[in-house]
Amino acid sequence: MATFSGTEGELSRTRTELLTFLRDRAGLDATFDASRDLLASGVLDSLLLIDLVLYIERVFGVTLDSNDVAPANFRTIETLAGLVDRRMDSSPRRVA
Image (tube, rainbow, N blue to C red):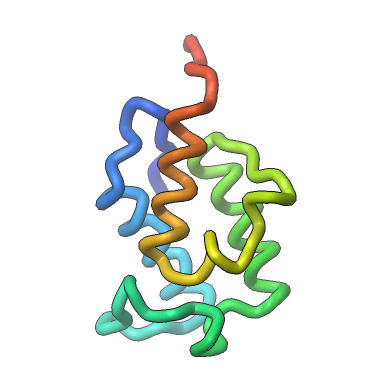
């Protein structure tokens, strides 16, 4: 599993990492479309949402606040990747 810094915030890498997590945790098949509605399709339930938020914070090194955890941001993998990338862009850079 990769760990990303804000400088590596490419949407495609973020999307791929999120899609891999959801495939593993929700049992999605390889043909799952990243633009499919996660909420309407029942893929994302309340327990998986909590796991996903914790995963995002750990892997991408960002903090999601209560305003971020809104249906509009978690609707699709695309919208979720956009949220993560915005948070990475606004996070202070860590110096090793």
